[in-house]
Length: 228
Image (cartoon, rainbow, N blue to C red):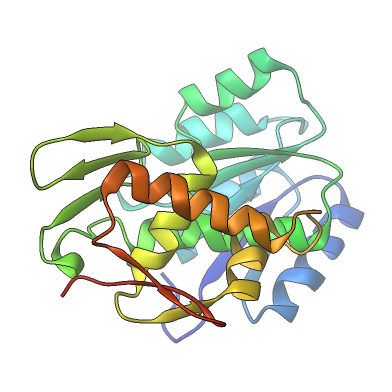
């Protein structure tokens, strides 16, 4: 991994316009961005810099994205690197193939900049909090790989995606008050047309499932994850 405060992203795509578009928007968010315009070069760069996340196209000449992902996952130093496909191929079988060779997510072109940034934030947050058990004093365990929550009484819950992401966001910083607009931007993205009532509904559903102990409302501001 590149040393320093910035998180590094490698984009592998054979379309220069896509590389330029993604690089521009990600650098605006202060990520350290590297690019490769084919699969072989992408594998070489990934081995060299060991990025935090790789954005990968499927359809590339010579070595396609599925092969690239499979190769990267065989490298010891890249086994835990986040890999997400970003491709025009939206067929179910292509998505399944990508996930089966080790990808963490699958996004379809074209994608709006804010939605892209939101998804990248979510993927990186998932990795940064992969062992969140210790942070919340073992009262609740969040498994970001399987979207499973285990309570201290042994109850195991499989949550819908947005409920899980909301819980994961709040639990990532116990005690921090997340403002409503920050929650909307992070979980739903600035391009999503949802109202603040959406947050309240998801919070209510979470409380029904995990209990009222963990999520505290800060009136007029937002919500916080409370472990006291």
